[in-house]
Image (tube, rainbow over all chains, first blue to last red):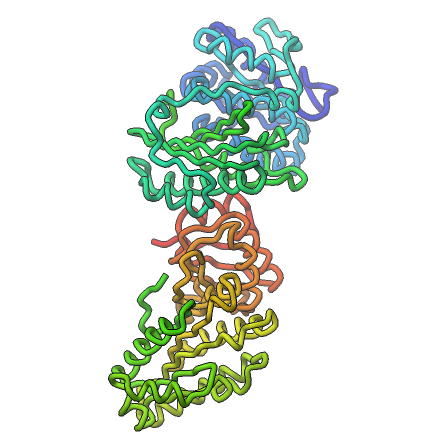
Length: 319
Length: 274
C-alpha cells in the first residue's frame, strides 16, 4: 500500500527538490520523512554533512529515520545504483510496501564530473522501477549551475515544492532518450600536453603494460590497480565491439591519470551501458559496468570521428 | 617468462632452429650432471648420431660411458609416438626417477623434443593432460624436464597449449601459466595475466588440468597472478561449480578481491596477499 503523493503508483516515484533556502528544503523534507515513519515505511536520509545535520536537527526527536553516509553512498554512480538496488530488494523481501529516501549528489559531482551523475539521475528511473520507492533528490539552486538544473528537470519526472505540491516536470525526457543524447566532453586541462602514451591498435596487454610503464604517480596502489582493470576492459571493448583504428592515450597530472580509448564506431548501443550490468548479454556491457566502478570519473563522447571513452583515476577535475 | 624455481623445474622450450635447441638442451643436461643427476636426452630421430655428437661435447663423454647420460629415441622413452597415455607415461618417468635415485644419482633430468608427440589435436590434448600430471609427480619425485617443441612445425598456438601448463616457458606472448605446485600452496598455481586474448586457451588448460577438489575446495596459488579479468573469474566460478567446489584464489592481489565482490560470485573466494 503506497502512501503520500506516491499513493496509487507502481514502481519508482522520482522527485527533485530544487530549493532556494534551507527553510524550503526542510519544508519539503521533514513532512516527507515523518510521513514515511508514521506509515511504518523504511525511511532513509542520504544527504551530505551540512544538509544532513540540518534535517537531523529539524526532525522531531526519536523519528526512526536511518541516516546513510552520503559520501559513501554517492562515491560513484554505478556503485550507488548497485547499493540501492540491493537495499531495495532486501527491504521489499522483508515486506516493505514503500521505501522513502531523500538524497543528494555530493557537491563534487555537480562540477566537471556532473555528466555521469546526470546519466545516473536518468538511469535510475528504470533502475529503481522494480520497487515501490519514493525518493527525492535535493538540489540547492543557490549553488547549482543552470546546466545542471536543466538536466535535473530532464531526469526527474516531478518536482516536490515547499508549498506541498508535486509538479510534473515539463522538461522530463525518458531515460532511453536522455541517455542517447550526445553530451559535450570538454578536455581535461592535462590533455593539453602531449600524451605520455599514444598507441594505435594496442592489445589489452600492451595497454596495461603501457600504463604500468607510465607509473602510478601519487595514486594509491588499489586505485592504480583498478585503473588498470578499467583500461584493459575499455581497450578490449574497443577492439571487440568498436571499429578500427582503436587509439589509446594516457596523460598524467600531479594528482590524476587520464586515459582515452577511441575507435571509429558509434559506441555501445545500450543507453544504460556502464550504469547497469549488461542487459540481455549486450556486448561489452559487463566490462563497462566494472569500468564505471573502477575509476573516479568515466565519460564518453560521439562525433563524426567515432566514439571516445575517457577514464580518470585519482582526483578528478574539480575535486 | 623464465623464473627460478629450483625444486620444481619443468621448462617448456619452443624452438625454431634445431641447433639452438641442441645448445639449450645440452646446457640444461650439463647442469643436471653437475648436480649429480642422471640425464636423458630424448630425441625424435635415431639416438646414435646424437650420442656420437655428444661424445665430443664437454662433460658428456664420460657420462655417456658410465650411463649417467643417455640418449634415447622418442619411441624408447615414450613407448610410441602415437597418442600417449598420461598416467602410464607419468608412471614410467616416476619409475625411471626412482631407479636413478636407487643407482646413486640425485634424480633424473630429461630434455625431450616432444614435437612428434603433439602434432594432432588429439595428441596435444593427451600430452597436455600428461604435462599437468607430471607437474604433480614432481611434487614428490626428483624429476626435472625440459619439453621442447618445434614451433616452425607446430605453430605458436599449438605450442602455447602446452607451454601454459609449465611453470616456465620461453613464449614471450603467452601471458599465463597453470601448473601444479607443492600442496601446501594449493592444487595449482595460476600465474601471469588472463584477458580475452587467452581466454579460450585458459578454458582449455583448465579442462586439461582437470583439477580435483580437496575438501570441496580448489585452491589456486595466485601470488604470481598479475591480472585477471571478469571473464576469467566468471569462468573459474563455473569451473568450480561444475566440480561442486569453491575456487580459492590464495595470495591474490587486492584488486582480484574487489572484482570478485563486484561480481558477487558464489563459488569464488579470494584470499588477499598480506
